Length: 442
Image 1 (tube, helix red, strand yellow):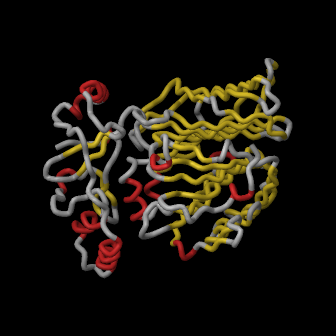
Image 2: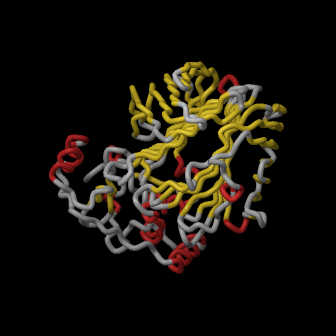
Image 3: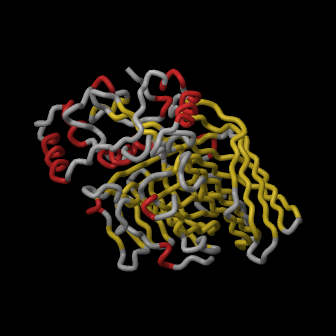
């Protein structure tokens, strides 16, 4: 259904959430641009704003800027449709970014703004299981200019804009996003796959634009990874070939199916998400998920579109993105204490069958471990404790080995044992948890 203006508002009053718009531009000059402003209230003691600008051009050109700002730097209009947080501002349909190195200004004219149902999609049966709330502009006309590295680049082209609020807890193992744009058509997929054992397996939203008109909104979509390869950068299995399939009805009731086969050869970026976040936000996220990594490709593709039994082909350039939040099959948290314990996510009762599946998955890691049937993480530190720790750290009064024990919500200061740490953080000591294949037992 058509989205309303309120669906495009910044929702910075929502607790324990990440909220904001992401703009994707496919330009006639051969550039692809992703720019976003995200308001994070994922912790109660320190809200923050994450700004990212990623520019990809011909011949492998790449320019990336990320900024982390405090809530006091964020200024929002009374109608909540515009916001300013230097170096970026969003004025409803006009976006600007200026940090001296990158100077960009563009406007978008929507060809239709949509949401599915109320726009809110639960990760489980109730909101306390987490949810994503979204509205989408699957195709827009973009105009503007970009000045970077001594060049002035025309941003005339087409855009896709997602307005998303994601509320904790984090039950998503992987996000798939595909955005194909050409002069008159667009095919967009926005899809989340949940961890094994979740009440829902998938949330999927698809949008099909033909001849500059939205003709279909689909929810019966699927993505199949045909081949993958292990990447040491993230310790995840990354797709090398896959198929996206959209399935549903057109707005006038005809059968609609779209098939996109991708051989992924044009990787343009891979991002360790936690490395771009401020420390306290990063630590908070790690109490809910493992290590999030994002992979992005740009590929030329021909897509088959079937409307009412009639086939047509769409050619264009597709931006494909996979965000890995953890292993879909299973995920383990390591908790640092004198007695090593583990939590199997989504499994309140650990059955023999489940343990057998885990041992088959990684037997050399799990064989020597006595897994508990339940796990209760220690309470997060209070706001005064955090403020004291930060102050002591800044004054040099806090020893480096004391820092993670005081402020990490999943550390136990009394039982903290460096022996069980396995991931280094340059500024603050050791970090955990991590994906199963990355855990090193002692």
